[in-house]
Length: 183
Image (cartoon, rainbow, N blue to C red; front, top):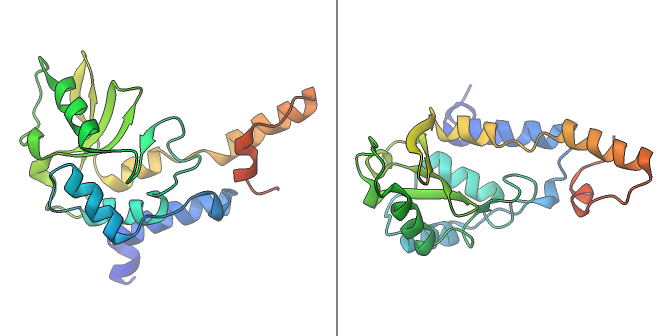
């Protein structure tokens, strides 16, 4: 296989393409431009975005749809203020982050759980992803951005089953139903 398919960007695209093949509408997500990705990083005081992170943002960084639903994610949602909140969540926690001040925040959920790349790992193309849970712990949760992205998969089949139950019960379909291709 070529580097395009086996490198971090290729692995991210394979995960994405598999979810689209499962039925996620491709137009339900919008990728960010490289300029927007660079501005997102600069807003957090970060000069380098790992290749795998950049590819995720190119695919879903402007509008993430069902991917990470209910979570602040993307070039407009995660800001320098989000990073300040993530750093504050580390207060009083024992952790092994080597460069928390230099970390890149990927997502924030309910302002108490953050998924981040350690600043010391930003030179890696597909670095580990840490999870910070305010008042609990900070630990490396996924071995790579690719593993994290795959774990955040919106599980289209489960959502289809929910839609079928809603239809059987005569309930109105949720707005996100439009993000899933019919069988």
